[in-house]
Length: 222
Image (cartoon, rainbow, N blue to C red):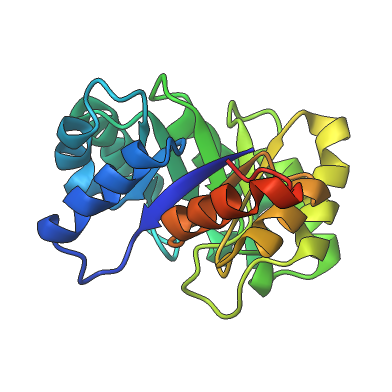
């Protein structure tokens, strides 16, 4: 399980992205997750470090048209994104148009060569809808199903990660937990529940906590 040091605030500036990348390098995190306008800068900052650049598409509502998501995904890959987290069209999904949701995801996954994670916004779904959302992601070419954007209520929950991980065996989709993961205890809990990737704005703090707690046998979160 690996940490993605995340900064998706709308008011984040270039002067915020540079230290984010430096922390990702310093603590040997998986990489950073930034808005599309910062991909090129993050790629430049992380050149030669091995850390990856992740960005978001259709964020945070998922409600833009498929053509817009496809175009944005292409640009993100061109700018240097190593992975893309796209938001499922939640409006279509809640309208019961599961086939259209699947086609939306498939179109994005099919237009780029980098791994795709699909944010299903678990806080807006019942458990039955969460399972249905995983089915919509399955077979599209996406690699992960992701819990939350962080823009629609509370944070990710252990129960959601367990539920999504329980579906993994059926469809081969990995799980990314995100939103509200602020310390090592929560991050480790998400990992134990089945998350293989964690998105958090507290990546550096969690890494420091892990380093300080190694003597006590804490489970690594990186």
